[in-house]
Amino acid sequence: MRMDDAMLLSRTCPACRTGGAQLRRNRYSQGDWVLKECLACGFVFLENPPDYATLQGQFPWENTSGLQNEARRKSYSRGENVVRSAIKGVRNLTNAVLRRNKHVSLGYRYFRQGWIVDLGCGLGNFGPLPPSCRLLGIEISNQIVADARPIFESRGGRIIHADVLSGLQSLEAASCDGALVESYLEHEVQPAEVLRELSRVLRSGSAIILKLPNYACWNRRVRGEKWCGFRLPDHVNYFTPDTLRTMLGQQGFEIAKFTFLDRLWTNDNMWCVARKKER
Image (cartoon, rainbow, N blue to C red; front, side, top):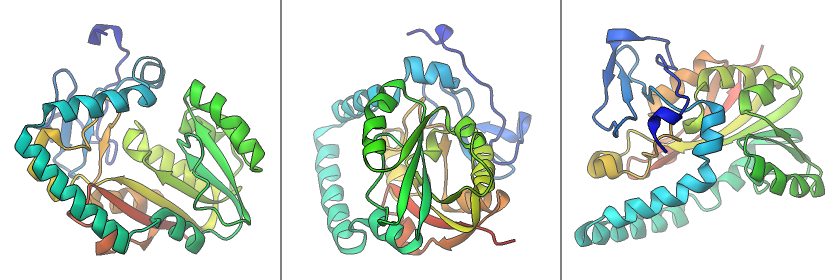
């Protein structure tokens, strides 16, 4: 597909709305996909992502993810594969000791009852739900929604077919008791607006569990443009622990759990639990 065929957005900084000369081209831009770094707040983002319709129609994650993984694997030299295997072994050992079933343990710790909204739900993230909770998914993909709907309904949940912002806007205020934001926020072209709307639909004190790539990790510094967190054009935001804290705070959340072990520099991803601020 030619870039001319894509409907592309033009974004200012999604964290602080800065534009113009305060946006510096990031060295990890790839071809026509332009990454920018905001000099005002430090946020890194894709300036010209496809709009929702183009992303879903021509760059669906369920197709591009496998293709990007295969292309990345083919680009590695023999020496790089040896290093990657060693790093993977250390990471698996660390995960087994420190992070086994992390999202399940977090869900059972922070979710109590009621509806838990799953942003960009895929086939449904039921593992972290205690028996007293039900899952409300929001998903934009036509095919995934068709596959997921009977799964949700068989487990007492329901799914909304929409982009996440529109799906949240269709819900009543204070109608949900928690949220799963796992492997989603890096894809969202309006992350601040989504978090603001999520705060509206949550009851005070409700927890959200987030998992997303950590742009500040050592592996990104070592691997450079081959870092697994770079997925253009479907990864449009590149959070660090600091920029994630800032955006959550600006949209009505406070940090409940975000320890050193949740954001290890040796791990490509970070985990964070935040709560809607009490009023």
